[in-house]
Amino acid sequence: MDLPTKFDRFREVWGWDTEYKLSGNHRPILVTMFAKEIRSGREVRLRLADLEALGRLPFGNEADTAVESYSAVAELNCCEAHGVPMPANPLCTYAEQTVRKLTEFGVKQREERAVRESERLGLIGR
Image 1 (cartoon, rainbow, N blue to C red):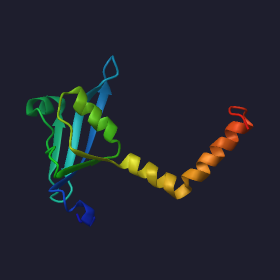
Image 2 (image 1 turned 90 degrees about the horizontal axis):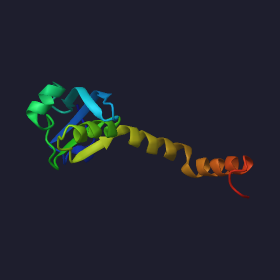
Image 3 (image 1 turned 120 degrees about the vertical axis):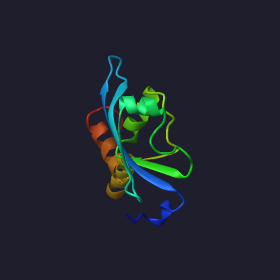
């Protein structure tokens, strides 16, 4: 797969996703992880026991490796909960999409509309 030239500085670019359940104290417990290196197509699937045995993510956490997921917070929380070093360059496409939508629809217009509605409801003074 061809990536934009902005990614040329990365030796590897991975997409990853985790499925997890929550413990009694709302910490994520990994059920399974899937990762795919974008350029080579290499795929890795791990369950919790595999990840614990490996002791690290199936891809590097060096500065020349980027990892992408829709909700990077979920994946990073799994790393933290299981004591696995986090990747150096996580990309969250949810955040990217949010910024794009705010830019497209205009942050200023949304802000002005929120202020007008708050004033109408008497939540803030005029």
